[in-house]
Image 1 (tube, rainbow, N blue to C red):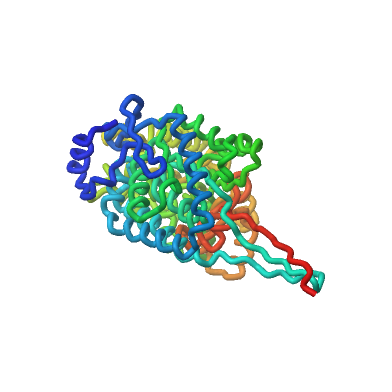
Image 2: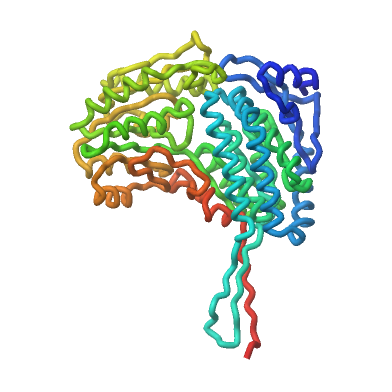
Length: 501
């Protein structure tokens, strides 16, 4: 465990005003459990510098935390109203805004993304608390007409119970609020295992939840190291107390969790990998498409699940698009996320850099041309890679099949709508897709045929609380955010009332 003095120095070094946001233990039943005998290090991915030691929560503590969550749920499920939960969620939203700069700084330090990106995430994350504060009092049932005049059918939506939440490193705040906001709005308790790489953001949210008045036990947070992560995942899936798992991460891990959950028949919602196509037709507004592609593909150095992975550009406007896009990429600045001129930070670890490099090597070996970048950037740190644009990428390149999750932009020519539709749908994944055209008949036609859960037509920006976020195929199932977001945390109960005649 990091001492109070180390935490204070950490706060002073990075200008964090609210030192209480910096927690390094597990949150269990309203108490912070600290254990200096078993810790793991959180490092700055930009510099490799050790930041703080965080408690590696023991399995017996996690097991107790799950039991505490069940007890808290049983206590509060019949004694709290949607309006009361709404007030707490609203306070959680307001506290995030009050601590906005500190939360963004913590995110940048442990995740590596630029401060501008982190500020965008905190605003996005807080928005889920605001949204679900508004949804909590409006979880409606139905009065369904019966075939019999002597009966009435009444349905209600009730909280499913204790929810296990497993979150990734790339959005360490938003992936928690998007799930926790919906879970608490429905009246559930939650146990959360944040990503090993980014526990500090999660623990800061835990502190703010306490400050907002969230009842003890309804939120328990368990930071663990990489080795213990698999054990906790299995524990969550096999626990008879936990009634639902919400997971954001890779498809491979999602398949494993689904298998492990079969013994307890849990309700599941998975947001998994993607391989998003980005199509620019000959009649598109090229400048709009370039601007959208810059953010859609390269935000957070390409490390988002809905990043464009394959850019298909019609041959008639290919040269114009490639020239304009490359010129804009060359204006960006790689560096440490806290530096004011930095637009793009490092990748999360060396394995991510290696994958980008291998995809570039494969494409170039098959005839692609490097338009800009193309190399690692070790002078900045071992986790940096240049923002890279490849032209004339062949359809046989690996990048067409595998998600890069890094700052590699492959430009692929196409001729016809039929051809590019086949290319865009040639994947097991179906999270997001994008296309640009000024032909509104094509917008409806092509959009309806893309095999994706979310589609941007003439926009590369999909993230907001009102969007039903989720995919199809190997990209998972369930929806987060929007008016549908609470549904995955509820069960429908029907009461048939007879003898009315």
